[in-house]
Length: 293
Ligand code: PEP
Ligand code: MG
Image (cartoon, rainbow, N blue to C red; front, top):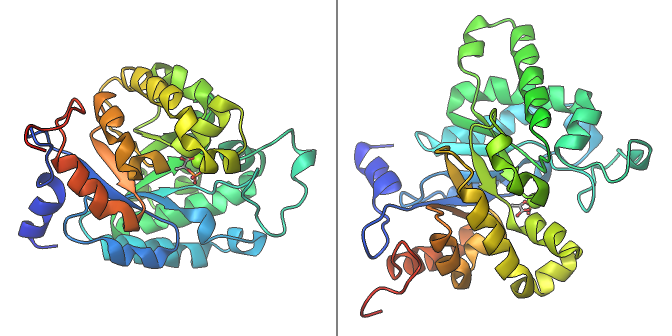
C-alpha cells in the first residue's frame, strides 16, 4: 500500500484525548478481506474453521495455502492474524465424528494437539503462506502454557521438514486467544505467547456457565464479570501486544469499559467497524465521554 494509506491505517484513529487506537477487522469468509479499507489496521482475527470445514479440507495443504496466501496478499503491508482451527464443541468438522473418544470436550488447541495430523497440515500451509504478507498465527482456546510450547515445537518441526532453513527465521509470531477463564487469570505465566487477543464470546460462556446461545441472547448480564476479568488480565500482559476480537469489541456500549480496562486494539466484524470508529472518537482513553459529546 502507498505510504499515505499506511499512515491512515496505523496512526489516524485516536480517542478524543489523543490516544492512538488500532481498529482491525475479523473475517470468517476469506472474501470479507474486501472490507479491509485504508482506515483499517489489519485483520485481527481470521477464523480458519470457516474455510476448512471438512476432514478433507483439513488434509489439503495446497488448498489451505491458496486461501491464506490470497488473504495475505490482499492485505499487503497490513498484518493478518490467522487463527488455527477452532473445532470441537459447537464447531464441528465434517468427517471428524470420533471426538468423544479423545477426552471430554476437546476443542481448539486441545483438539489440534490430540489430532496433530490436522495441526501439521495447517502449520505447513501457514508457514508457506507467511512469505506472502505479515502473518501472525493465533491459537484458539488455550488453557495452559505448555499448549503453546507444544504447538511452537510442532511449527519448528514442520519448518525444518519444509527444508528451507530461511523459513526458521520467518517463523510467524504465535499468540493466543484469551477466552478460557483459567488462562485469563494466569496470563503472566504464558511466557511463550507472542501476543494476546481476548475472545469474549467464549470468555462469557465459560465464566457464566452458560451455553453460547444463552450468551448471545443475554450477553449483557455476564458483561460486568467479563470486563472485570479483562481488566485484571490486561495488567498481566507484561508489555506484549494485546487486542480484543470477541463480539463485545463490536458493541459500542461496552467500549467505555474496554477502554477503561486498558485495551487499545479492537478487532470487529466488518459491518461494525464504522460504528466503533465513531464511538472511539467520542470517548477519552479512560472510557469517559469527551466534553461536548
Ligand atoms: C470469542 O470466543 O470471542 C472469539 C472471538 O472466538 P469465536 O467467536 O470464534 O469462538
Ligand atoms: Mg472463541
